[in-house]
Amino acid sequence: MRTRDIALVALFAALVAVLAQVSIPLPFTPVPITGQVLGVLLTGAILGKNKGALAMLVYLLLGLIGLPVFARGGAGLAVFASPSGGYLWGYPIGVYIMGIILETGKGEPGYPRLIAGMLLCLLVVYLLGTLQLTAILHVNLVKGLFLGVIPFIPLDLAKLVVAALAGRQVRRALRQAGFLVSREARRES
Image (cartoon, rainbow, N blue to C red; front, side):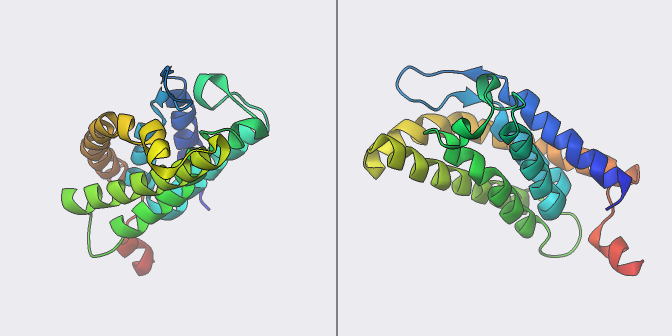
């Protein structure tokens, strides 16, 4: 892995950590509104499947070892075992799946492919988050969806739009600056 790649992975792990601190607790659910999803979607859109998933794993590892990188300064194994911990597990998997979608086909992905990848990423995060939430709180799936998905959909879709618009531009700028190498260029070298 090149030094630039390591720097980008670290930068995006830090971006998600910073955005996690934008946290608004809701009185009816243990899941807060955070900026994490915006960071996760940007990570996948810009770094792709391998570096993006690695950035999310670095982020999770930082929290696991005790750095306060999760929402409201949370850290440690207890956060992973909490009702909202499943969403964290979904980040690297969702980003990896998003990256697969984005890296399918030729050239840079257009907005339809980008949005499809982001929607799949969100679905994975919602699925894993809801499964853990329902298991820990001992509620049924419908109650789990009302606690951990439905209230978040409008804001997460707004984050998706921002991430799609910004992510495409940042990815293009990083390619032009030589910080990201296209699949075609990697195959040629």
